[in-house]
Image 1 (cartoon, helix red, strand yellow):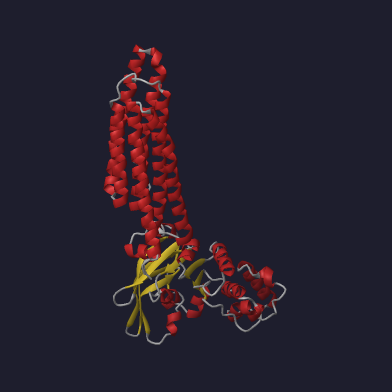
Image 2 (image 1 turned 45 degrees about the vertical axis):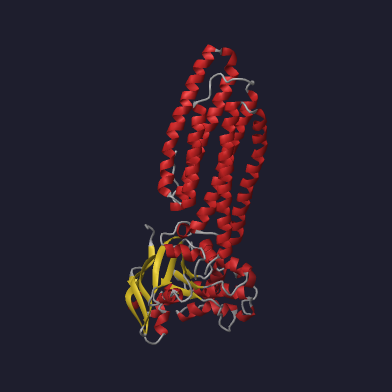
Length: 217
Length: 256
């Protein structure tokens, strides 16, 4: 006996989650462009676009709750619904970090940064790569990949420390720009947190595939 | 599993004539718990639960291999009346005797030799209290059992099983002929009863198995249509991470 409606509902959720992950990834990319190139109007758009991400996340949550209420999922299906809901929330938070970076940009006085942004875009690239791989591992239920991805976070953390050290040195040279330096540290911190959120996604993928609750952080 | 075990099957195989209905079933039923037996129609669920108090003996040509132990005693070396005192049964459709409520519950103890009216009255009250029926019938004990509603009749049948102080209560689809409220009452009752007894329940209703049981046994027929035990484990594990793909497919409604 095939459960066609049920299967179709779960497939639709998978597609929605993929769409949400693309929105989030794009928001992250735009946020660092906004910060690097001081794009204030684009930053405003990014901030208002976050509402769409929130709505997409809520829509996935509703879909999950609806399946729980009407289809009584168990075993792998139940783990899929639970993982989807959790991953949607992680993606929504990652998009919030992107929005936060646009807000930070609006608070830093127009003009050149206290230092050229090199490592912050690198952090974003690495985080984006991790994010994409984690969603791919979810879609393919690739537990091996989900277990490997978290090791990439080390690089993001090292870059974060580097950004922090460099900004501390710059502030010593130009103490009048301490506020800007702090704001840039916050931006880097947001990207550092993205890595942690992706690790959470990987943990959900391991749960989805094996039923085991793991700590990969 | 480290729990105390009240009933064990060891390589239990059941034939009806030339037809093998159950194949090599080995499992342990932990004491003071509810074990649900699930599986698609014809998988041998009812044959298995009926084996536990040797109801299949009544079927001409039935024959068994392996064994079933209750309290480490082979059920085939026991007197069947004694066995059924220890291992009681409640059926799908309530089947009270066409007697008074009192006489239904007192029936078993009388057969086992209790004649004293006040002793019987005490047993009847205790059994009806344990089956959560006392408050509804205490003023009508002389009324016919057939005047009760379906749900009440089923609880009366449970009281009748309890009256002989069994260790194990077998329930074959105990709620499938009842409405949702009566079903809920039976499920709540099972939860209370497991403190004193061990319950084995056959159910077609997967959600009911998930709700009420502590352990789940999943049976499925093989190519020869013999029922095999595919997976046995804690219900919370079976319904979140079953080991066998066939269990997963069955409980998630993909076949059966």
